[in-house]
Structures are given as structure tokens and as C-alpha cells.
Length: 304
Image (tube, rainbow, N blue to C red; front, side, top):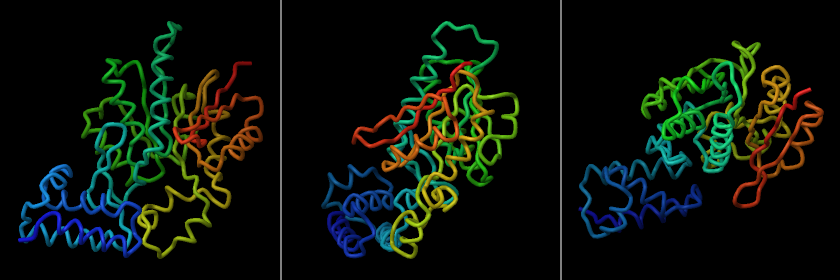
């Protein structure tokens, strides 16, 4: 039997040579841990431990798939996001760490709305547009449960044009015990008329990658070639789908409502300009991430 350290080093070299990973050693450690059925820390701590033939063969198969660019998250079937482990597969985009800023901002905003003492005639209505794996909606629902917010105080609706993605989102919601806090709707962005009325909060991590950038990586060993193009392609300037949602916010966002939209790190000027064009007079703020990059647009529909 081969030692864990030997397998990790061999896998690392293969991934480095293939150019399929920016973190070849981390990927090799995660995949070996997955093949063995242990945590990555066990692989690191026990480099001399022998690996059985079946586990070694499974690891070799995983490395071969990673060599051609298949994402580690798809190979393991899970992705850690905002403190929870989500099931992921090719039905939806893999949740990115950058999106956690949107979730953090949403939690703070929802909690503030619930504790201001303002008189409400019904629950706070929150939409997660283009939910994909359900990462944003599920993370928000889990956070509200931890803060002892009763389900009846917040109506949280997750929507996506892809039925397959919605199925994955449902699985994640049930898996984290928040299925009773979420509604799921098949819709191309906001549903017509926002169904039961406009939303108080709209959250969205929509496709914002330029189509040309995706074309340039076609056939290369990169993760995005394995993810649904529908969840990545934002058109020629990366803002096509976001622009469509901006038009819908005119009737889909309540007066004094707030929308949080994730944007690319190079869209800090173009995205606000698009807002000014589509929604003149609306408040628009760019929230930057820890790296100082534009990451979230915060839009407010003012009264009057």
C-alpha cells in the first residue's frame, strides 16, 4: 500500500503539470481525503498512513478528472459556503466565497428591518433571484433561524429559470432543515407582477461574466467549462441579465425596498451607470469586498 504523503505529492505534480489548478496541493489533499473518507486534516497529519488499493484507485480517478479541469466541488459533491456545507453538482453554479459578502449584507439588512419597530401589515418579503444551488437563500434562512426569527416574519422566495437548479436548491434547504422557511418558484428573474406583490428585499447573484471570456476558455482545463453557461454568461458586457432585472425592479421592488446585486470586480463604474440609465433617481451604492474590489450593488427605491 502507498502512503498518503506519496499519493498527495504525485497528485500535486500531475495537477501542476496539467495547469488545471491554481492550488494543486490543496486539491490533491482534498481529493485524497474524499477518496479515503476522512477530513483533509487527517491526510496532512498522517502522511505515513497507508492507503488501501480501492481508495488509491478512487483517488487516481479523481485526479484524472481534475487534470482536465472538473471542479473539486463537483468531484467531492459539496462546497463550504457561509459556514454551511452545500450539495453541489453540474445543475448549478458552484457558490463562490465572494458571494458571502452579499449574504452578510442581507442578514444585517433583514435584521434591521425586523427590529426597527415599524408597523408592518405582513411578513417581510425577500426574493433570491437566480438562486442556483440555493446558496444565498439557504444561508440566509439558516442565519435567521439561528437568530430565532420566526418563519412567519419573513417570506423567503427562491426562484430560478432552471428546474434542475431549483431541485438542487430544495435539496439543500431540506438538508439544512430550512425547507419550511423557503418557497421555490420557476421564473425567469422576477415572476410576472411579483405574484403576491412587490418584494421588500431582492437579492441576486446573476451571470456577470462576459460571453467572450467564456468563449476564450472553451476547451481549456478550467472549472467554468464544467459549470452551466446559463449561470455565467452575462452577454457582451457582462451586464445583460442584470440590466433585465433592473427593469423588473421598477415594479418588483416595494417603495423603500432594497436590492443587493453581486457584480464583477471590474464593474464598479459600468454597473452604477447602468442603474442610473434604467432606474433614474434610485439610490445606488457600491459595496467593496475585503480585497477592495467592487462586489455588491445596493439599490434603494426611494419613496415619492
